[in-house]
Image 1 (tube, protein in one colour):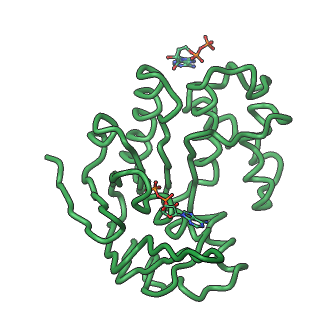
Image 2: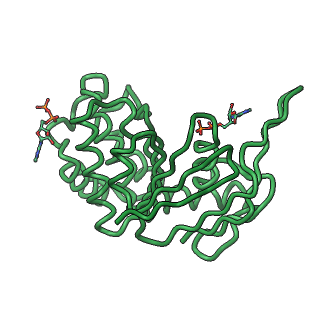
Length: 225
Ligand code: ADP
Ligand code: ADP
């Protein structure tokens, strides 16, 4: 599904150049659950942003589903993001002015799904994420664990084939964190590919494989048995 070859990324500000990714290679098969780990500042979020087509590398190749995405127009990238990729963030990133239901419905509005189908799909996913009983509440009325369940619901309502998660349990206590990890595992068992950045060895054990980054340069892989 994903083949990254010799990826390079350098951030340039007025006086500083920071090479974040250097000769990075990564392959992910459809259906895998991969954890990306490494020290703070080693380039994990940068890699995730490139995987999510939110950012462009300076050099190298990123093949998604057999197609080279480097050089794609912003329009094609946005299409692929909307339909194929779901994002889950550490800070939930829900819209405070919208209810749980409306937050989850929004991606379907953007992709032009008709109203009747929207209702059916939102209800199905709220039920699956065990947050249906809070459908008319606003994010600020929910616990962190509940907010993250809503965020996962929003990420999957368009049935993406790939979920990118950036420290999805970083703001949760262990019980809520485990619940979110269980939901991600269930989605993976149903066929969704997951790439998750985490600092938690515990969370990484939910994955099939740990990719370890060091200075954006070295990638070693541990296959979990
Ligand atoms: P990680 O997620 O592993 O903590 P990041 O990918 O966030 O690492 O950052 C890697 C390095 O790139 C850090 O040194 C960070 O300061 C730098 N960096 C990240 N984003 C930018 C940016 N937009 N401009 C300049 N430097 C950046
Ligand atoms: P609250 O009682 O404040 O609404 P939660 O939404 O966190 O709290 O729910 C409490 C627990 O009950 C959680 O572990 C949650 O997963 C579980 N739960 C809530 N709704 C359902 C449901 N429809 N089916 C199964 N478990 C549920």
